Image 1 (cartoon, rainbow, N blue to C red):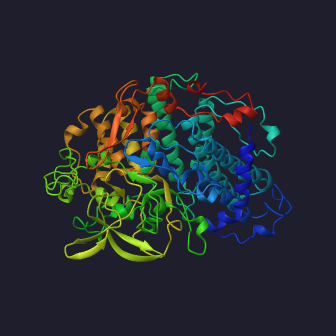
Image 2: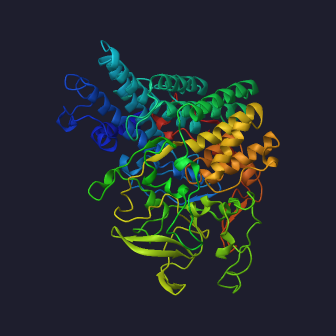
Image 3: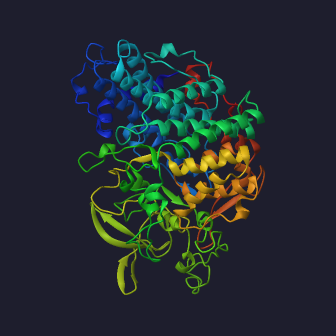
Length: 620
């Protein structure tokens, strides 16, 4: 059953060297000098703390490959269009795990066979670290050395727990492997373990990590106690959501309101500890920072900086995977610029773009609430479209919006830095459907933004570097897989489920809002549990857009029908700033399709190799 797993795990083993380059350590052992066997010979390895750290770096490299392009999953929601995956197939360093996936709002559950395999490759790599240190190094270790080795095991167990958490979030019941697998015959008859048992094993990993990790990471990209607490809290939150809302597509899974409340309570306790016990703060204390005038981009708010290397090492980044791409070593770079920007920026491909509907979710800094819904007008047929009050193509419509809007998306006549051959080509104005055109604005000549990836009237600014020197695939940003702002919002959600709106929960939501220069929530927004949940969901949409959270939120809340309508309905169009229909989702969609969006298909290739692997109900 695990043939693909071993293909992936073999790649991960090769990445022992790559891992050292990605994550700084004190290790100086060159693994190219080691015996080139399937498992490095014990006589040549597992002797020093540096050996253990080297192996751990391989586990980080494997984990990075299945978490650092999670923004593709944002396409499973309603606010981001993901039209493909940019990474070149065939390389774990180039996002191969995400290749072949389906990233639209519907029909995606059968597209992640390769991702399933890579997740198990990461599991095997973490088991390799845990088992060998426990077997070969822990016996006889005492004092500081014992603590160091236990901390390395804790990091590996955190990564293993994160990986199994992702597996159960997508597939429910999954095979559980807690040791090194050397041959496919060892797992050819393995069965799926009920999700509750897998969840308990994940909790055991997270508990160990909470107890053994230091309070601060030893280097950028390494893990510490707040990360373990945050992921344990998130697991409790998801379990509570599933137990509250049900998961009928997962055979044998039952709702249990009492268990849900206990898990919400446990989640809130973990999140509260992360918030209160470690001195963590939002980037630049959550200050909104300065903002440039409409149509200018010399000065961008702090929220924009948060998604550039300026934020590497910030305490808001509770856990992040590092990249070290350079023109001479591009293989370990992130591809954020290539994925999020257009041709004007180093020939990038704009695989991910905001949908039009996100724009109306950005609230006003003057009122703290929503502006009137924008009017969509076509400037090629309506001469007054650019000047009509509240027109989506009138740049003045976007005045006094949440600072995160200018930090996240570009609308007509917003500027970004163009880049070619690692050099700036100056500012380029984004003008929808006017690609690479000669334009004059305020007496200054420009060439407009060129892209083939937007069908909404917007492109992303978030994640796009605004300085020269690195190519589109050579980024050095430490991509966050857990941010403090997310913890704030998860704490508010969990505590609200237990006790309704609490003062400290309202306070942390307001901290997140403050970075957008929004006023505090009006009392009506937290006058009831439902109203406060709505406010939390609103902040999750805006704060976490393009970070891969929305699809998972919709599934755990069982909110797909709320967003797209019930089975057999007329569906929902996604439009553009001109008012043109672009894509329609869930038109006359049968109930089975909804079910298949709530749970993913166990890969048929794995089931062909192992008939003991049962299939999820909607895929039978």
